[in-house]
Length: 368
Ligand SMILES: [Zn+2]
Ligand SMILES: [Zn+2]
Image 1: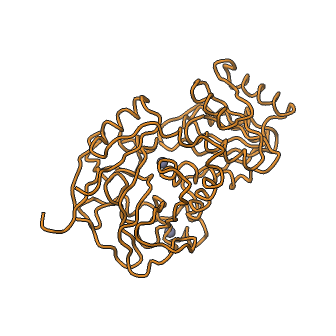
Image 2: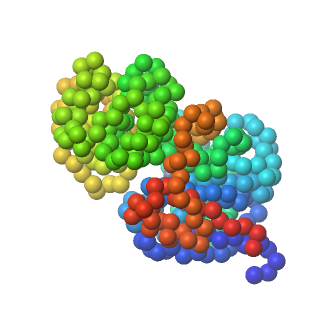
Image 3: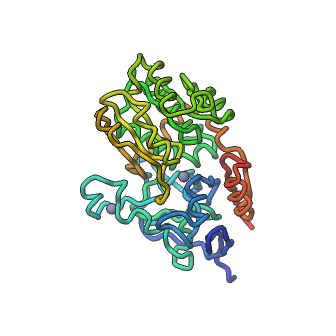
């Protein structure tokens, strides 16, 4: 293939069929960066896309979580989005979406609802600059796409997860205004749940995890959760609500966050909360899954419901700062428990889907 260097990427051809394709490494346009992927993680939402369950994403380059090594700077790129000087060789973390700054939502300050959020990720890899997703040897960071230099103290797998789970819960908990001295119920002890426990701890909130899987509960204890309500012991939403009330002075929690990703968890939310509380929905992202829900439980308790998908892009900078400050206090690295070469991407996805691994990382080999 001529003299130009090429790279490889993982293309989702049809549900559960991934093909490794090879393309010329692009040269960055002004304001853009070309990067080499250091490490990319397999996230739960990647599995929805891979299985064909995502409402808009299919036939695309997979991958959205990554740690990237800057290999080529486009004209005019001198700093990251926090003003830190940037040069070739630096490690950066990009948002996986765009906040274009020009659409009606960006214009209203609703950056996470940007109409053009996924415009590049959705493109066919035959279309330049080819490397639209992070499951590859390279990744192209567009002008308008926020990216931040990664503090050196953050281990690679942990840094690679920052642009999804941690940024998402950090933003969500700020949206509902979780503050010092409040109680927070976390529904679901997966990666997002553990990150939420860490953030709430640092904010000075009291944390209560609702979960029923031993290793998730044990991990939450290592993340310093204050209380666990095990749903094998408290078998109904009412019983779990009573237990949460016992733990919160008889009232129910100030805030609850749904990170279990199942509709029944949302239906349970009002049972766990006090009058005048806030509920944050993040985990349910695949339409078409439903649960019976009693809306009067919300009304009668004056519960504010907030939902968030994506985040204001500068939250990625905050997430990296948060990790740099707390990396020794929480076992973040435990959340990544398997590594695969890029060529084994299908195995990584299958094993993740079968829950044989918790969160897998892809490490492409470079230089061949
Ligand atoms: Zn993710
Ligand atoms: Zn926009």
